[in-house]
Image (cartoon, rainbow, N blue to C red; front, side, top):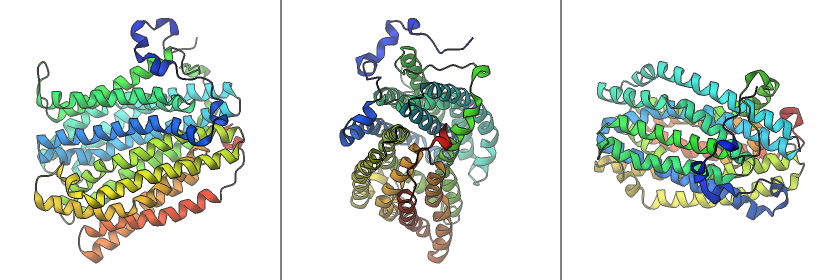
Length: 476
């Protein structure tokens, strides 16, 4: 007997809490190939942009409160970021593979294969979550200790990481449902669920870190627990809305009836996409090792930069999340001119975001760094770094948009090449070389914009020279 998560009859009045805002959203997906491109991209992308902005706000506020605990706590958070990002990378990357398959099969009018892909995606996401929890708990102490951190930093990192990693299962399954709702065009459901988790996290942070009313002061453990509760809430909302029948896709968790032949197809896109998502973690780890040879402030500044840049790149990511299902659906339906038009529209929207980010980093970097730092010399060094790094923002807008389009069309390897160029092949050797030539952390900061512009050139070539043909060979 198939295991179905909930039933429409199990939803009480509490289950309808999501309101008409999400429950009345359309279920007919043909609008993805009939509506005018600009309004369509806006309709799909803007809910994701809004949720990404809230997510960015969470990242900033979370770091702001942790910084109030101590500098050691903030450093521990920076060192833990790569491991947290790996969990997110595997979950998001595989979710992108599921998203691409479901959108493509729906566009090709193969609902049976869309449902089989969705069911297998959820099953594998559960396995991923359990595996990631075990692996990360085992490697975490050795990973944190490899940077020569003080005992206080190491202790804070382990206390924070132990709690956060226990929520890896909720993260993995929640992201899979996020991509499923996005694949059928239900962006408001995804937006509502993500925003609810982030807002609860933001509200709980000061209460659980410093203590208030019934909440004891838990310090950095409070920040970790608030993060986990927010992730659990997001997953619960997805499950409740799914139980209402809104997704329009039946998900079975019976592994004996799963179409395991589709797993290779899901990983064909999800594997490269996971690597794409994991590369920033590898980059930060390698750059931290380079920066540690100059001063401790370099590691701190890099960690703060990655918190600040989420406002820019998570917003661009929101646009990309909106266009992936559009690219997959129209590609599956053979509407190739619409695919090109969607790419151009998304690129224009991404440019607005990255140019705004460039202006902020050039005109008021001291204000941005001052949100996390009090030492004037460190703020000055961080402002200097921000001005240099942001010189590559415009180029990154091109690379990220092209990479997202390629993922939506099922071309995971081309997307992976772009991300390898951006996060590893160019930036790391350049950072090593320039830091030795300059004898300072400036070499690392200049490596960012050099890598972005070179990557943009490669991305342009890969995207504009792909063959627009049906992807049945990769997704059927």
